[in-house]
Image (cartoon, rainbow, N blue to C red; front, side):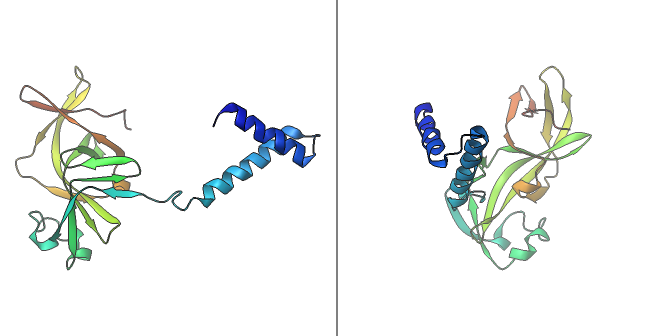
Length: 185
């Protein structure tokens, strides 16, 4: 909003309220009430918006990693689920092949998103393959990672992640590196 139109609103409000004794407090109070009214009137305010990319419907039991993750899939064992290429949760877009920070145990534990499972429309899981963190490379200021010899998968939601940011894997020679957006303690 341009400054002139906001100024016009405050001039009209001052004339309508006819309270000139503590005008700054009155204007601030009225402006905050109006802002709260606008924010509460929007139906989608503070609601998790979940957008998904193109998806296909599959049976849960036909997934490659169903045997490893049968405990997590127990609540949706008899359901058709959708596999999607990407999902956007609260303005953060997760794609297959992107890297996420799962947890921290001396070194961070990263996972590569292999699949995105959506069921019942608004419930979703990121299926991540856990990759090994070898060491911190101070020259590149990145963590050196490698695929484990026996791949293990895990199901996570965005709320379960240590950091919601999507990370990338970089390759230099025969080494793979993952850089954090900022230092996580």
